[in-house]
Image (cartoon, rainbow, N blue to C red; front, side, top):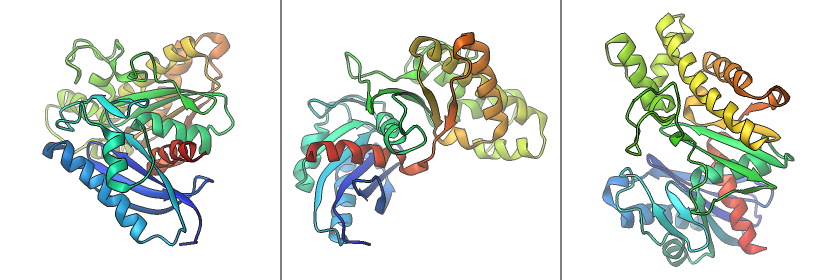
Length: 308
């Protein structure tokens, strides 16, 4: 690895935790990951993240690792560094002093942000939306989240909870139960597990995961095609409504579900055009460019801000 100045970045998700060393230009020069011990509580989650950073620093040829940026699942207060709320996927995560704990464990000045916001910042500053003044980011994976980025900064909201796109009402969801305790929300039909459940309800049997449905769709199975198109249309309908509210320069869509194929994308883009006002129907809808490193690049961006 070239001897260059870097910051460390961490992406704490419900399934895995990734860490990287990232240059000022947004280049990931070293990367490690480990399963997130979400069921073991906050101490174990923090230790996993800190260990990855310390291992990267120990093996780095960089003269200085200046700071640490952390993107994490949950509702985060960037000003205090505390986790304000989280689902049971990360047990005991709410109330954690994320910034203080990792700064103490790594010895690095630390900044924190929601993981989806980190992903959005990465794409807005270094990815497919680079140069756009306003960016609506939508992440569709195990859940559905998002962010609105203005001049490279993600809007946090009055209660640090802006971007919960999955918890807006969706006509596609009917009365399906949502992970938040409500019903009829977008996440209840459009996230990876819930879209898989929709296929299983229609087919009357179980499948291994959404990738299996995507494979069947590519082989021409009509039920798989219809299910993926239904999920894409649900997301696109929600995006179209948000475009009408926010009038972004560009929409960026990422997350694991966005990799299921063109059936999903075609339905999504068609639904955006149906819902958007005529003057907004041409707002571009792009796929992410940075892939799994987007949140790390975004977390690194906020780390460099602490240096500067």
